[in-house]
Image 1 (cartoon, rainbow, N blue to C red):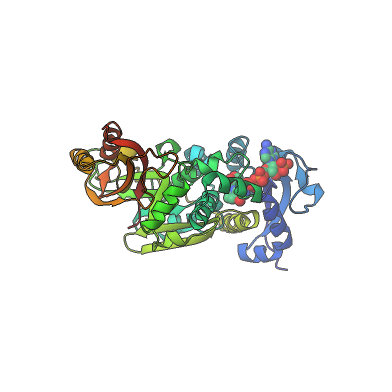
Image 2: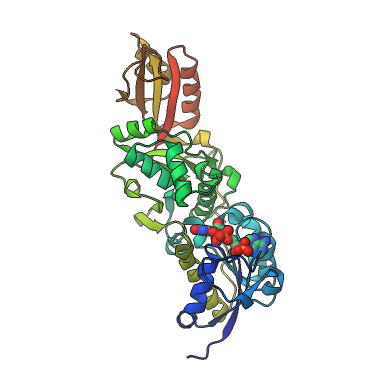
Length: 446
Ligand code: NAP
């Protein structure tokens, strides 16, 4: 075996991902050493309970509860504990002591990213986080390196496997949200408390990370507009299918031009997560099950699609170990780590300033003149109608929650400003002719 320089690798966390990372490091150390140009010595693994049962059997002597002791003297620290503390303090300590850090912790990067990147910059170390945005899918390096000479204009990502699994089954089977969620929990696709997934928090964290990289701008998590999928029901799915769409939870990161009043360059960005109608022929419509995909539109490269497993212990370990090899190569080459590029510093616009197409579903009284009244309100609100259809589900009064003498209409709009749209929908709701605003969904990707 080549006599490589030896690097000390400390692993914090041996759960779903960490245990797989440890196993691969221990089993394929020689191969990784050849790729990295350095021997990767796993010096210890910090956990909460060294005696807890693990997915993978790990040497007991490597397990410790003393993360701090492990960090001291390490060349590379892999943080796979998750959560904010003690991960944040441990990472800052590791960087301060000159180690490079590899992490998959989206929650931490989306909330404390700038602090962590600053800590790395101060000592010339690097933070690698390929696994933080879409599990095994290589998307961080493409955005940070491969597309560094291009201009990313838009990203549309299915970045949460749990919600894609639920929506995909609802679409294929016509099932209700609550039934599929219960099944997903039983099968281990969804957590006992599914809030982070179904309310879009997890996708919003990933959107903040992707947008920061794509637009060279630090995007705070609270600037990401977020809506979850809990209001999507079997009827909405059915209506979407009938209209040639599928509903997906999308993370949309978009560069907007013509924003002279908020930005000297006239450019700004929007970052949002919501259930979206996308045409069934769009590449993202064919992302099934718990898979993820990120669709990137760049000025020169055109359309690019990245697809694969967005989670899973061993799959995510692949991305983590790629980062470990990169960190080792950097350590061997020496020099200062390349920091995050946030100099564009574009303003992030609130959702009200975003323009998209919409599909509005209304329950209205089934009387002459109603459609004209609705059309008038939309026109006054600067919302231009592209299509009006009577929903397939509209058989007046055949459902328990529909009063007799009501009809259901589905209005497709031309691109409209979100603020105009929401004001108009509020006016429709108060108009007297609209019994219920059934849904307002954005349309993306056509
Ligand atoms: P996990 O299964 O919950 O494992 C967490 C590990 O960290 C456990 O080994 C736990 O020790 C250890 N730990 C937690 N708090 C600790 C503390 N205070 N001190 C020492 N050890 C501590 O988590 P995971 O699913 O592997 O996820 C790890 C990270 O990867 C998270 O940031 C997650 O967001 C990210 N990620 C996960 C996936 C995935 O598919 N799971 C995909 C992409 C990204 P014990 O074992 O003793 O409890």
